[in-house]
Structure formats: C-alpha cells, structure tokens
Image (spheres, rainbow, N blue to C red):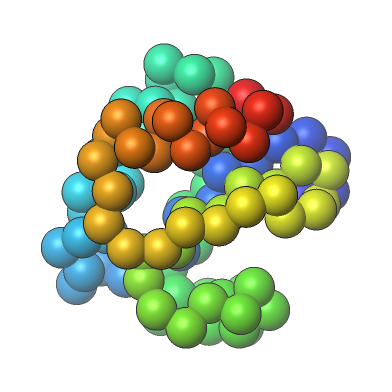
Length: 91
C-alpha cells in the first residue's frame, strides 16, 4: 500500500541503460537518506504504469500518503536526484 508514508517510485525497464544508472543512484540514496524505494518494471506491471500515466522510462515519482508530490524523467546524476528529493521537503 502506497497511501501511508513517503515512497520514491522508479518506473523502469530491464533493457534501459539510463534506468540502470538511475536505479544505482536511487539505491545509494535510499541507504543514505532513509526513504522507502519502490521499483516498478513497466513491462511486468503495465497497468500500474498506465495508472501513473508513465509513457517512457525512467520516471521517478515521490508519493506522500498516496499523493504525488513530484516526478522527473530521464537521466540525472546522483547529486541532481538528491537535490530534487531534498527540494520536495518530505525526505
């Protein structure tokens, strides 16, 4: 359930090189910052991706108590992701 707490959700595909880099960054940031990360393979869970209106990968969303606070897509460095997460002021 994603309606209680703060979650960082990454929508990815196994064949996507940019997704692998984002996954690596988010895994490190999850350990450093203490958020709960959720990975959703858009090919394995297309209905979930569609419900979140994800049309490409990678996409990273932040939910707080079931409400989407922000989303980014594409290639980001670890520091850019950290800055974005801190700017949302929930982590």
